[in-house]
Length: 350
Image 1 (cartoon, helix red, strand yellow):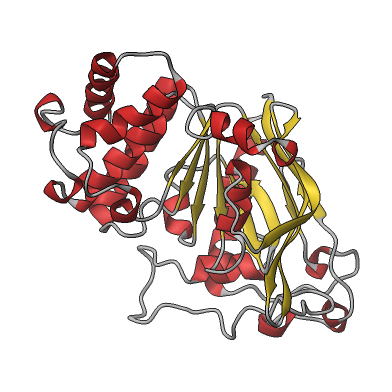
Image 2 (cartoon, rainbow, N blue to C red):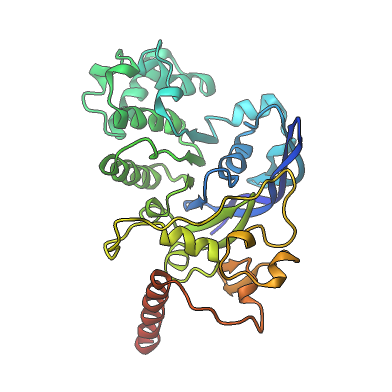
């Protein structure tokens, strides 16, 4: 598959009265045409900041100190505001977390959905509204034509999120950035929105970056997963590798915190402690103070990425040659056993 987006050695600081916050620290990832990459991690891990860089939507106090963001080989970070405006909503579009703050309460839905088309295409208002009706129908708004003149408050939360998706896809963008688009919705509506995004992806041939703190959501949409912690990616792999053969203790914690059909306790696991203060990033592995498997080296040296497979790597000293074998948490051991069994069966078949 060909790469449509490459993020290389990205570093972003935020200026504060206390000093620069090193929010994004040497982040690298890529996105292939037609695939979905999920970026997961706790709140404050840097997911949204990283992805907003692709749209050129950083806060005024943010400063990119190093790196490249290559879209079809061109560095977005070197584009002018005029060039970025031509790209936003056309080549790259974004679905934001809260549909009520994304939609203008004073404008009809028809006008809001048609607006990106009018901005980027030489098209009449009548034709733009006709296309808006078609796209609203595509995202599952019933009687789309009859509702073009309705306002956001006349729609449910799930319908509003569908409208936000319609605005994002009306120009058939090459990349769709979805920033926690299901967080404010109940579980049933979440599943519908995820199914809708996969359906739309196949129809308009777009690539998706899906941001979430909920690994449970990832299983239904992602091809690959990047796990972020304290402004860095700490594990990277296919969705199956992350779910069933995770190697980083932070990923283990995220998986343990996710309820499953096997969960018997009435209390969910929570990773102990809090993320580090990025005003002064810790020496060594940033996750070490919260890591029950931390070794002396974790407090002194930052781990490099160790390759587990051609598609899977993790930055943890537990993968270093000679590292001690640790007793896995029961849920992670169960997943690893399923992974081993599956790959043993594949060897027998082959």
